[in-house]
Length: 299
Image 1 (spheres, rainbow, N blue to C red):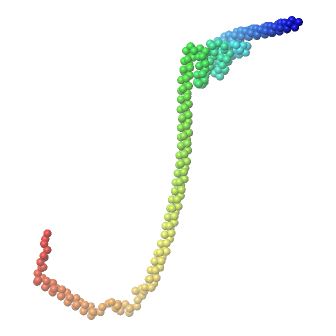
Image 2 (cartoon, rainbow, N blue to C red):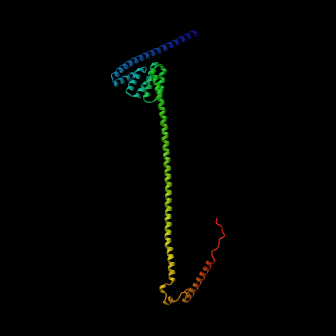
Image 3 (cartoon, rainbow, N blue to C red):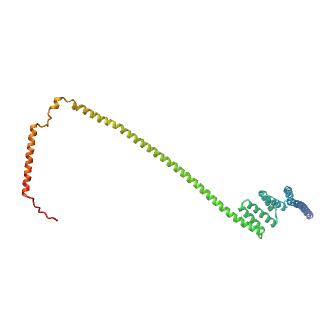
C-alpha cells in the first residue's frame, strides 16, 4: 500500500515539473516571437529613416530613428545610423552617445568594431587623443585586419604625443612666467627699499647741510663781536693817546729826549772826518808793501 502511494506521488511530481517546463518554454517562445516582431518593425522603421536622411529630411529621419530604437534594443543599426547623422552635422556629443549605445547592444564583432571605430573618430574631433587611442584599440580587438582603424590609431598616438609635449611646454612657460613675476616683485621690493635708503641719505644730507649752514651762521655772528671788540680796544687806545694837534705850543718847541745839540753835532762830524783819514792812510800803506803770494797749487 505504501509502495503504491509513493509511486503515485512521484508520478504527480513529474507531471508538475513537466507542466511547469512546458509553460516556461511557451512563455519564452512567446517573448522571443514578440522580440522578433519588434526587431522587424524597428528594422523597417530604420530603413524608412535611412530614406528620409538620404532625402535630406533630417527632422523626420531623426524621429524615425528614435522610434526604431525605442521599439527594439536589439536593433544596432538604428543608433549607429543616427550617430552618423549627428556626426555629419558636427553634433559630436549626441553622436558619441548613439555610437556607445550601438556598441553596448552589439553582439557580433563587426558591429562592435564599427561602433568603437566611430567613437574613436568623435574623440579625435574633440582632441581627446588619449580616449581615441583606447577606442581604436577596442575596435581592433574586434577586427585586427582593418587598415583604416590601424591608421587612425597611429595618428591618435602621434597627436597624443604632440599634445603632451605642448602641455609640458605650456607648463614650463607658466612656471617661467610665475618665476619672472616673482623676480619682478622682488626687484620692485628691492627698488623700494633702495629708494627708502636713498631718501634717508638725502634727509641726512639735508640735515648735515642745514647744520653746516647753522654753523656758518654762528661763525658769521661771532665775527662782528670780534670786530666790535677790536674796534673797542682801538677806540680805547685812541682815547688814552693824546692827539698831536691838541699839544700846547711850548711843548712842541722843546727838544726831544734823544735830540743832540748843535755843538754835539759839530764834534761828531770832526771825529768822523779824523777816522776816515786814518782809514785812507792805512790803505796807502798796504799798496806800498805789495800783494801777498798764494801758496796753494792750482789743480
